[in-house]
Length: 280
Image (cartoon, rainbow, N blue to C red; front, top):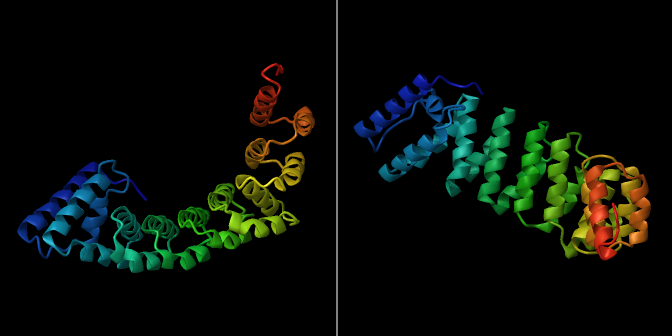
């Protein structure tokens, strides 16, 4: 979205407030005025919008006006409407957000999925799982983060289906969601996934098992540290420490480790195990 001129934004705010003063019960926010009011980058914009929304609510009918904007022809308006519905945690906005989560515009979908996470509505989970396969990386990342907030381990299998996401950020969000939802009830699922030929599934399974303190993860964690590059390496090392892995195995890994963060994790752990006498 483009940054709007401060003068245009301030004029839009005046127009809306003037309208509220003239007819507080039936104010209609025209689309061009609303989009300017929302600011598109103006740092004061969102605070002002919330204040204006509060005035609308106090006058009655304000949220109905906001819900109408979900049908706007302007994607910027639809995106900001999704944002506000999330901030206000408006239960009546669930249906509108579901529609916006399938919008043709990438950013609108991403904002709507983010807002759905704030509502944490159980009947939104099916839609969020569909959005895990969205064509836009940000939507997939937001869907994973939203599912993590559901606190429902039953969605784990859906997350594992997309854990090899091609986008680095989305993939990490999906992995983090798996770990946030790690639960002993899913132990058999994790153990089966350890045998997967797909390295991302094996990584997620090993880390989830470590999160619930299952020692069966240790061999897989060691194998993955030998073979896998990428940002997950630090998590793998920390998982081994959590499971109190055999210091001799960590010593062997340390000899060939090149990642300074991973080396530091191992060195600190080995030093603690040796009573603080080990030199780096």
